[in-house]
Length: 216
Ligand SMILES: [Zn+2]
Ligand SMILES: [Zn+2]
Ligand SMILES: [Zn+2]
Ligand SMILES: [Zn+2]
Ligand SMILES: [Zn+2]
Ligand SMILES: [Zn+2]
Image (cartoon, rainbow, N blue to C red; front, top):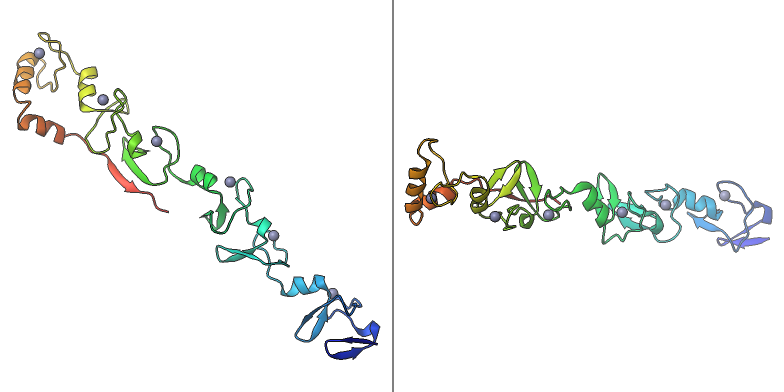
């Protein structure tokens, strides 16, 4: 006779409620007063892993509102095991920080690396604010205006030094060309105004890039 679950049984009648395999009284699981073999118990009553769909016998890892085998909660791209406190989610799938950044964040056109925080948009591209710099002198252009030549940003000074026509008299670049006929006199005029509002107006006219926060 078998004594189990507070009752008496024929040894051959103490069976798994599901598969009717004969159970040993010291190796079975119980649910609602009925005996089960371990396998069926977990199949029927244990939480299922969100990744492999098999029952979780130990403590489930809970992340993204679902339950996982601790070993099954891994980066969807590289398979590295993840901690529920340190991962990124995209489209219902978990990723390590590295692959989330590589795959889903905008890339900086300057350094080619992902942009996690502030995005600067200029010239139809995205940049780290510190990477949007004059091609010539590497001064960041995030707060000042910039000039564009062949899709690349330049500070006002270098743009004119490189691309503006040079004065026949002093060889300094001529900042604004109003007329092909009388560039020398225009140059003199601009130079005279350089300390007053003329300079101010010129810099205010430059396009200023827009800063944005990337959405998490
Ligand atoms: Zn069974
Ligand atoms: Zn699993
Ligand atoms: Zn990864
Ligand atoms: Zn960059
Ligand atoms: Zn420059
Ligand atoms: Zn000159």
